[in-house]
Amino acid sequence: MRIESSSSRGSTLPSVTTASFAPKATINCIGVPLFRSRAARDLGCLLDVDPDVESWECLPLELHLDDFRHKPDFLVSYTAGPQRLVDASEGGDPWLAAAAAQAGYAYRCVGREEREQGWRLRNARDLLRYGAYKCPLGDRIRVIAALDEVGSFSVAEGLSLFREIAPVAGLAALILQRIVSIELDEALIGPDTVVRRMDLGASR
Image (tube, rainbow, N blue to C red):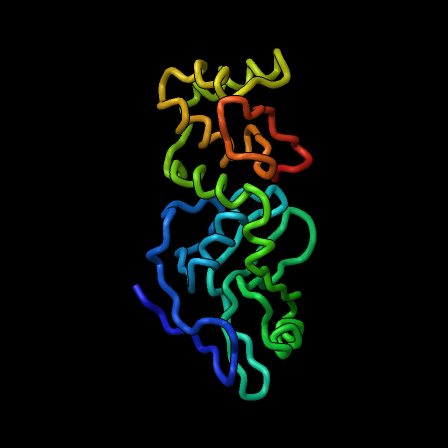
């Protein structure tokens, strides 16, 4: 599926969007997920595991300034603070911030170095492979009760609590639903990764 954007007059951002990038699942995306590039899909993965992000929308509007036109990759709504237009780009044309301000939004570019820093992107992609799963009530209660009792446990220890769904899928679903949390930046998710109840202050 291809959709032409209306970027024009020297914009450094790609002008074609596509929905063919994996992983297919999204969690907090409003509307149809459409991505201009692999970079935009990666940024969408990061938005879905950011506890400060309440929701995000793809290609939400067209910015205008004089003869320049551009559709930003995302409109991001935060649990606290104003909405922001965001592009997966090394740096937008100077007019974009001014056009966004005229439309009532802040504007930001997120470059490759920031997207790929640490292990968060790799872990987000791994989790979103299970984005279509929902953890059944019984398994969810068992996990929450165990965490309330012991405070935390490793991934390997927690997998034994799942009886109604495949354990890895169930745990990934609880992480993506922000019911439990793990450290995403320090290492790849593994048997020793620590699982905790989500900090309610960091969850919507």
